Length: 456
Image 1 (cartoon, one colour):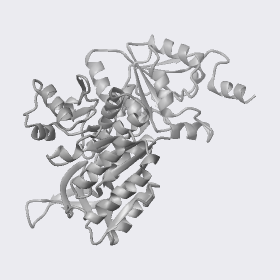
Image 2: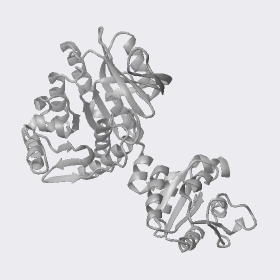
Image 3: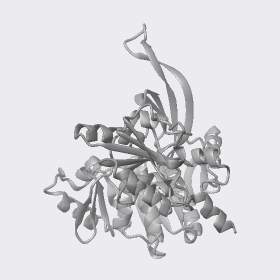
Image 4: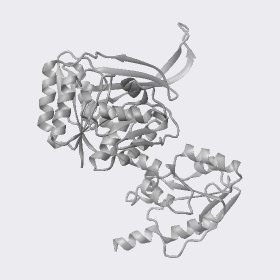
């Protein structure tokens, strides 16, 4: 397993989630009745969150006050099974805490408590010494600079110099507009606004290449990157390449930058090319901005987006468009645990019943309830991907209920297809659709028989 070291400013993100029923009589502001409160690691801590979600091994070097703040950070790290051995204490240092109030997935207000003074010279020396002692244990280094005082010029320059001597890549999410302290890093990930100020260009399609090349040249970077929000990510190695965004619906961009740099580092640590790393980062960011608050993306969520496995909301929008085009929609469902000839022939016949074939895939939890604790053999993502790769299948969607009734109710297909073993039985959803079609299975072809054969 690859190991990644994160260095930077730890932040605590607090969330107060509730509902709004009335306006305050004291001022024209909404009253939020708080139903739920939670705290998560933010800043450099959120980079750690993302790395863990990808399945990486990660550690963090940061500075915390020698007060109750240490116990707050310590608990949040231990909850993630992250070592606190690399936390450096500094007397009376104030922890940055960002508190967000939300209602109906919308952020109402945010208030911050922080002190952004730089760490002391002696604390800087402790970070540098610690880094030099442990660097050989890690494959790649991320500097997550939130401008809260940990990544001083002295610390940052020393880290880059030491890492370069040992041929360790340093990836930096920069802050501020003086990038001289980042000179010699492998890459930086500024957004377009930040890059415009640093390069003194009002960046547009015409001068993007000039600006991104200037970043690479001025700061002696191996790779130059500018994130372009909904337009994707621009990369300059030997020439300019733009990787379009994979985002479908944006709820909250909080923490998306953390996801991007964590994703790039994760792939580079596994010896992937920068192009492969950027593609992965785009997919990961697309998942995260579709969630509320500081969020992460799992590998399965990322690959589900990459391989066209749809959410229920996405399927609803697709179905609405198909119906406007007068397409005949066919729906069937199943566990499809171990794909075999019987499944293929069944789905080929189902496809012939209409224009578009949508498959409902039972989630892992659903399969376990229906088939027992030893099933499924393959994960919901693996099963969905295999089914989705068949040329006769147009879309797959995972559902968590024991039956697909609610999914069928939402889709309202023209034809509902089930196996021949449902002859003289009630087919779930048959009361919703125009036509229910039963298709005979191939004798002797079933997942259960395959499993029994393997056991023997």
